[in-house]
Length: 408
Image (cartoon, rainbow, N blue to C red; front, side):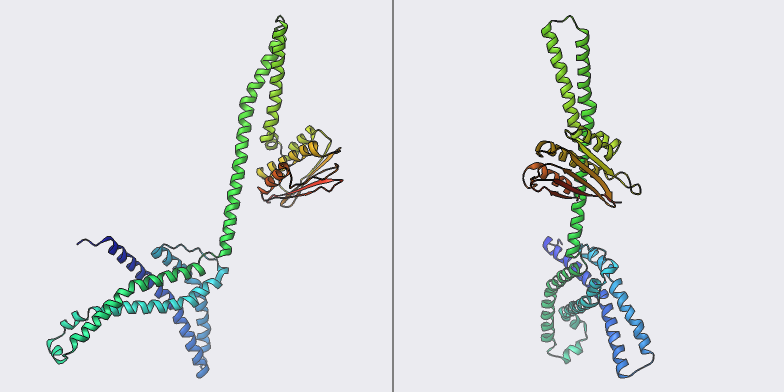
């Protein structure tokens, strides 16, 4: 005999629900029994004082506490094994939520589960009354002439109750799942905290991936295109020095190609430094910033203060952000800071913070909300959870203050 798929699914679901309810009744009635025991001991002590009762009561109360905490893990396994609902492992400090479910809500569910299982058992017995009646002796049936009507009525009631059990069981299971997720699941604040952690990790991964990609491009340009341009410039220089008997037009072409090759090398060097400076990896932030200060078109006073008691190197992503902040800031000062005659760059390590301060003596008036340069700097700083502040009153000076997290 082939069971229809819909009926098969209903039977499987009902079996799962009944198993979930039966397992839950055992776990839920343990705290209820402890509650009843405590109440009876308290009433007994109030009505008929017994010297031994307070001792038993003092032993019973810790059992309630242990049950309120220790039943959480069996509940987690019940939800996972029978309903596929994954509940997190609650920490010991979250006892309030565990006590609320195991000691308050759980006993109520235990009573409902007991009543439902009792209804199922009574429905099974009532729906099979006619079978049991025909199993008794004929003398008993002869002495009870109205037994058939009563048995038929009980059978109908049993079948109706039996038909209602799956829906009642499914509703009770859904109610328990909602209560379990609300009290034993992840709270809203924990969900937000974990979401923030996931976003922080994914953003850090994206920043590291972008930095690694810049390093790769820098290596490819340095080891590939740059070397070819250097070789081309050397060959053109050699041709210009050795081929002295060429016509003037040919010599002019070689001279122009030699100059173009050297200009291309210089532009490629600037591009490579803009992608990721190799000196930053090899010698550190101090040396890389010294190179920026030396190449700046205006005098730059640089001070790098890294306490000897702290690690000298920050995280690569933090050092990269600090380098590009100083580089972009010096470029903006040279281009936009009117009447600026010098710039001051100060880099200090204060515990878990790397602070970068760039100041100039220009006329000020810079507005971070205008232009993409300062917005780009602020976004680069925020990519590593840093803070970006800028003060540029009209008349100057302009001070850019950047703080980057640098874990110990």
